[in-house]
Image (cartoon, rainbow, N blue to C red):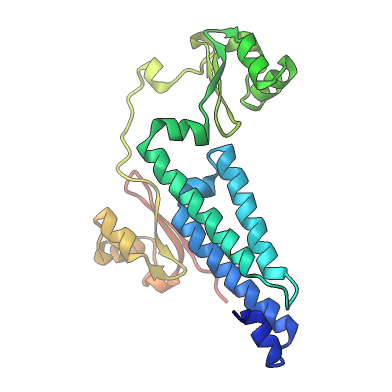
Length: 242
């Protein structure tokens, strides 16, 4: 089997051009794999996701910059094997709780009902200085103010403060609250109306033009940015005059 890169060289192709072709191929191969692996892999929810992402990126980089003339077919195989394994393990994790625990691990409770779990810290090889540092990241500067602290599979610490240490909310004060009808949504960007977002909000172009005229704007093309707010108001920034 003739290596494709050797074929290019036999035709007198410059090795820099071969590197460009490899880089393009590696780029689109990585793009395809990231789309197949999904958002969980991209968000690096677990340590396994993190390591798998680094490994796939390293293989892709090696595929792109390997000197011309060297066989890159093995890198290509490794790239797709790693990608397919991540995808298959993700599917298996959806079907089986045991598989999910094997791949992702499970949360560890470091503080339970205000009491530090020494045995759990020992199992995880964490000391009190490590715990204090993790708590400070979550703005908990005193262990005595923490009800629960849970170390997630991705290494992040989730903290629940004791009831008396929690900030006061509007619900606690029984303050009437308005419900949000929608998220703040961009309806005009750089002079172009966002038709999909307008349809989702149930807004018509006629309504938009009417609202713009209230702000002395006669055309959507004059608008740099317009955002529809949860209270039904439209905030607008005009384009700068050139």
